[in-house]
Image (tube, one colour):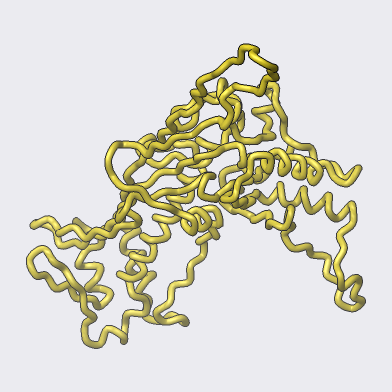
Length: 360
């Protein structure tokens, strides 16, 4: 099959004969992914078995209470029954690339075959015409596309691909007192709810989005303090918070800071006036700008995620984290395949230490 125009352009762009940065292709659109990085840094693992990850959770209160008595007064007994099973389905994922032997020849790379095994070597004199390693760049693109798509899935609610992992919007809900999470209903189990302030929640009778207002010390800053207290009520030794915010949310927070006074030990420095303000912190924790929230039209949102051992966590099946595959080529096509698979699940063992907040 003949190459199409895009494939020819890809070969030519990667192997231009005169390029100032020989051997280097400068990436133009690889955004930072702080939430993905944070989930990966604290990721756990699980073994195979059933088609879900299951664990026990409970309210912590069985409904009994102390009663006074004297002498031989009758007293009552109760049987606590508060344990429930949370279940989160693990999912399998694949991404793969194909490159033709012809493309590699144009780039000065020879493919050596030994049965199903394929290896590559550079041709003599390749450095005279090949200015970027086409195969390395294709594999680099594969890695970035893997990270990009996983980051998008982790920000989602699972509706974009029902066979793929369901992200934070399936666990930290805009309307926290409705629906189910991990097969446990939120309506009856008030302890199985995240904190929230969203337009959707306001429409359902709960806390709506916060209106940025610089008066009285700042409405947004005041609300974030109150939200922190609510989440702190249920914190434990393993609670570890991270804030991920869109650009509008951060700008709103900065607006209130500027209007109510923003002080530093260095004070005013004449001749070196700098009106820029670094991204703020709340209770000592950075409000990290998450570019993906902006891309998803959630620039007015902030997630306060408990990413500790009992909070929201990404789990990989043992041995199935970014697993590489090199399938053998079909007998009638001279191509090379590279694939990556991942089996994982996003879980939460506690919801009331996390929250989602929007500004109006």
